Length: 106
Image (cartoon, rainbow, N blue to C red):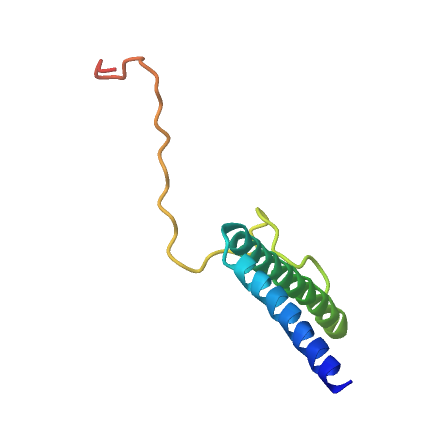
């Protein structure tokens, strides 16, 4: 009985080592590395989406808690949110007309 138990234990350890070896070898193939990189990118994308969703939820909770209302982002063109820096220089529109001006040059 004792020898049979050691034989089964050795055979099980051998099978386990072979399976682990095959998996390790598969990881370092081109397909295995590509799969690992894809899984890493997917995990990063899921993490980013979850953080963004949590941020939106928390912002809405804070707005509700403090009684703030209105849009969460400033609207364009309302003139409420002006830049405090120097004014941008006025742009001059260049025309492609070939009509002569007062001096006669096109």
